[in-house]
Amino acid sequence: MRAAPTGNVPILIKKYDDKITVSGRLYKKTKSGEGLSHDPNICALSIISKTLRKLNWDKDIVITQHGLSQQHVGRRNK
Image 1 (cartoon, rainbow, N blue to C red):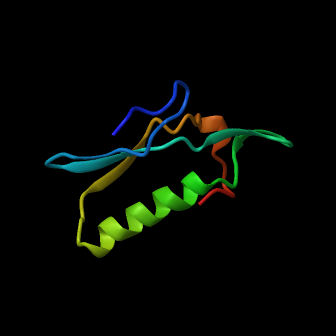
Image 2 (cartoon, rainbow, N blue to C red):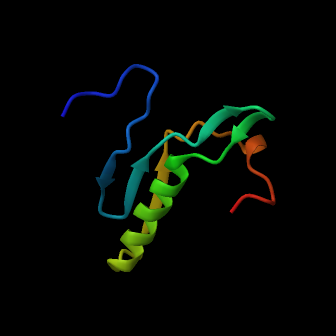
């Protein structure tokens, strides 16, 4: 498989003994500003996480390379 273009974050899944990491960008500039937006990656990462839980993975699932900072995440985010 070829590498993603510069600036893109591919969805990569890595399994460790105590966690699974899933990389994917969630940060995006929007018309109303910058931060978490409605994006296909949000759905893809949610589906991957839900599927891992359905397959009985009970340890940590960590989203990496998301590009969000704490100021982008508020009470209204899930």
